[in-house]
Amino acid sequence: MNSKKLLACLLMVMVVLTVYLGVELHRTKQNLATLEKSYNIMIAMVPPAASWPEGISKEAVIDELAKRKELFPWQGVLGGTFGLYDKSRVWFVGPKWCLAYIEDGHIGGYILLRYHITPKGIEWQLLDSEEI
Image (cartoon, rainbow, N blue to C red; front, side):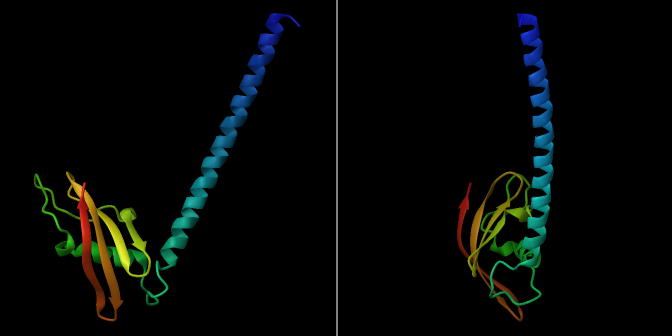
């Protein structure tokens, strides 16, 4: 085989591989998006702890925490107001603890809280904080 034919064959193989890998990458991205959607649906339906009363959702607990600005240990800077602006940055650790990232748009940090769900509402206690 002469060098032009060999080069043409190699080029054709590279084109075929590129198309194949592009299709597989697209399929993998679609599968990942489907899995992520299923995970988000599942995580919204399952409470973080078995001790949670029926009917209490993770979103409701996060919304309640977001309203409790007195738990946030820092003052905003440059006109910012501390808040829980990204609900995906709240993690429930075990049956009684919650770790959340809060910020004011300029500075932020993590707060560790103990919580207890009662018939009257949610009781929160700030255990620790770390500004970053």
